[in-house]
Length: 325
Image (cartoon, rainbow, N blue to C red; front, side, top):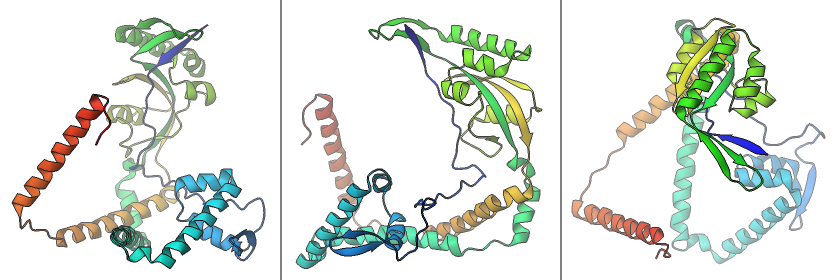
């Protein structure tokens, strides 16, 4: 039995996407109606309420949230242990000792620095007329297309499952010929989904989603290469687009929809974009007001050189397989 292994890549999401992702609730309560004062556990002899749990989940690390969802008992045990350790630390006044006092101050500074930016974003208002004006003046910026995709990898090899032996590899030229064949068949009218199942190296989309790309291609999405964005967004619905080359391989798209979202659909994301821009201008102003002067260049030169020397030594030790000191 053989399997084909290919190098597959396509950026399908971006921090620059206009569409704001829905903010997930940190606590799922659909299964049972809960009130803030409902007791859900007893921790170190005290009652632990749903309200406390709900607040706690707002600041938990992703790992602790995952633990709560997977193993509530172990999660609560960790909370109980941390409370015990905190009481002991307060009893011993560890927070007033060096270096922990200084570390706490650094954490406090970091948390408050981020908090003030978040607060600024929450209180910044955007005028409704500014939202409408921005939308009307940037319609093409919002354009998005839903597409089906066939991806042919630049590199591919066959491997026998029984012993892992590589049976053969195809060259980039052979893979490009394969992609051109797919394009020709698609333009001749063969079923695109069937072609994807037979030829696409993006197996997830081909086998599980009828070759649909998971997210729309948007004019403002820097996560999608510009040559792909431009070609797809200029195409009419139903058009086959390709070959579009990427460093990882070749893409063929079929455009299923291509339109500008309505103002109602875009209003929320536009408000966020304008609000974020206002907050960024405020942060930039803070940066211009911050000032630094180097008063002892000799110290900093020595500091930088010493650290570089230590890093070089560590890298050399790791390269030789010796434990870093």
